[in-house]
Image (tube, one colour):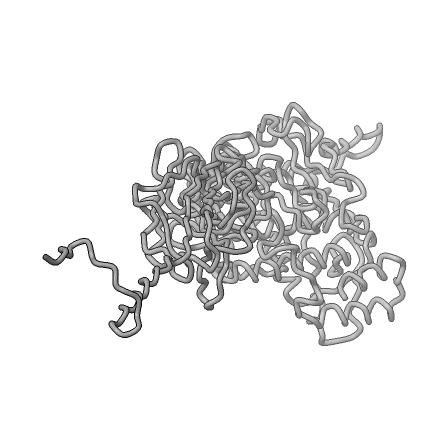
Length: 601
């Protein structure tokens, strides 16, 4: 809803009734859906910078202590939001109205950071106060539909001539100056600070300091650094002083914060007043040029016959120099914000084992390894890297999980725990990401294949034979090896065939008895941890057909062997011959005397 209202205002809804209605509708709602949060819970991708502080050595502030605009809030304060539907529209160099896109960016940054760092208690009015004194709310809201200023907002050249002396750190990428740095954008970040804290809060793929959404998000994160609680006065003061190390700056920002807390309203983009007076005595416009302060005209000499007034009469005499205090006030040193390690990472680089292979049930010989690098290619220590196994696989990290988080060491390297394949073959991916960031992932391709055996040999035993209708009583044991080593866990296929030269599954003869009681002539079994495959006595049935058959065994990797199976029919017994009858004395033929008989005397 906020975006729609903002667009309507930008398209010219400037009448009092329309503006008041739109402002009341937007200001009355604090719900997250009214002001969309950033693309991720971190409020946009963190940019990268070298070192451990938020700004380069020697400046210690977000803006490099650049000049700022000094207009004070008007004496008459605006109404509280919701107290009236006819909020005042105060014109001039200091008004209560905030351009629609700028207001939306502040509110969006507040909601996003409160969702990820609620202990910071960031108020959007703090961003509005800083945005007011830094750029006059993005030069009166002169931004395009995406929130990018129509012209770059640049501070004076930080060349040491009345300002800090900061040599170029970005090769002119942000500020167009390859010699010195300049503060950039509506929140006036110097390039080195933006390199560390820049955001892509509007999800357009760029971290642009001239975009009010990106700049407001970055400013909020910067102010919340070092575990600050901005509800505490001491932390709030430290946060503002980390932005610009000036007590006057602190007091001015706080005056605007208080003013906006008493109430404000939206105005159409581009209708805000341009900033004027600058803290260094210069005069500013939408480009913040570095023009010298205007010269004070001297009083012309009096003409002849004209009485020269005395200083007491004109009030323009030489002013009495101010009294210098014996001890000038000191400002407590401000500790620069500590940048989280993850914020410094520009990319993850694959260091080793981009392609992983192993066989089923085996450990991978290498583990995915990445390096966390900053924008200059230097390693970043202390970064949490998440490794995740994705895809259809039963491969697991040591300990049995599919995810693991590892912290980079001093060299910026992180390796996943050891990987071990299950029994499922196929391809999958191990993905490495930076925890809390949306940088491109580092992907490792992994493949699991069947374990192999190049040789299958039957362990010595008797020839295998059985009669029809029985089973083979002998145990059958086969040893699997691969490159001379025992091959455990190899899937061996066993088939009953009738020919070694044309091995096709037999349609009769021996068979295996399956678990459901049926008979099959092809089975697949795995070798044990000792590399042996065993068929126990009785596991192989002889069948009802006599003949010679073969048990063919094959394994991935080329191992094969044949074992002869002989099936015979049962032996048949021969009946004994029936003896012939003995002839009798009566009427029977005369018996032939036996060889042992002796003739009578």
